[in-house]
Length: 361
Image 1 (cartoon, one colour):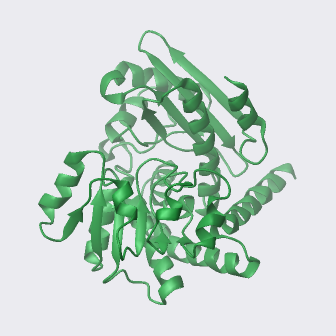
Image 2 (image 1 turned 120 degrees about the vertical axis):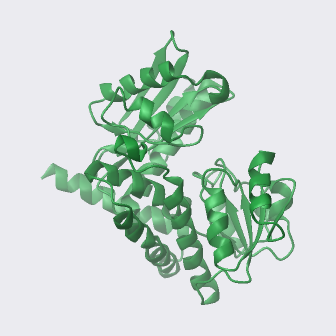
């Protein structure tokens, strides 16, 4: 690891991780990073991302950032779970195999339950079924294998609740009817979100790097959804009310924030803020930001329920409360005179601090 990675790992404001495990299985080509940020509230739960990173250092940094986000997400979701995340390095379309996933499962098992995995970008329910052959600590499995199935369903539902809360806070009405919503990324989560938006009467504009993902929605809803060529075009649409980043992180950065026409940002992507200070830039422009790890917690609520015996109705009821949590954060932000992202962090950090104190007694 470079000095930059080590600096991030041990820097209190973005690091503070309890454990980082580098995993390698030469026979299958597996190279993976498992990052455990916090177990203050319980075992670290977070998905496994399978991605072709530009460098190993980039992969480690992504694992560190994502695992930290999971600590905050799980805390604000009211789960007695800590935060962790894993990344498998490589192109899943080329490298993924049952043997590789089983090798990865053995590394998860070796942590003895300190880390519980699930799906993320590049991994799917069928993959978790394979991982689970080697470990007890794999969630997001298929119903046939005792799991909850596709966690994207409740992830999208939770984001929709966050949008409703944002609309309530800004416009006094928790409906998206007549609002123009731009969704960047209509894959695992985004296409479910589009369904909720259309049912609520929103005008939907989409984009995705995968043409087949866009085509699937346009074919299903002819004349009801429009598409633009890329995210850069999407964020500049005149009259856009809400921007929903639902792909990879870093969507809100020094280039995109000044160009945004939307007055609300609420999406499913993790780590949307490219660096500290972006949340203030959004606030200064009068853009209401619904913190990503708050509104996209529906999926982790769903997979966490597998640990106690999955019940979809129970999970959906808990995901519905994302609406109330989002409003609470906006109220805290207004009272403290800080951006919503900072308010969310304060609430999550207090819950984790309370958890550590309780365990120390």
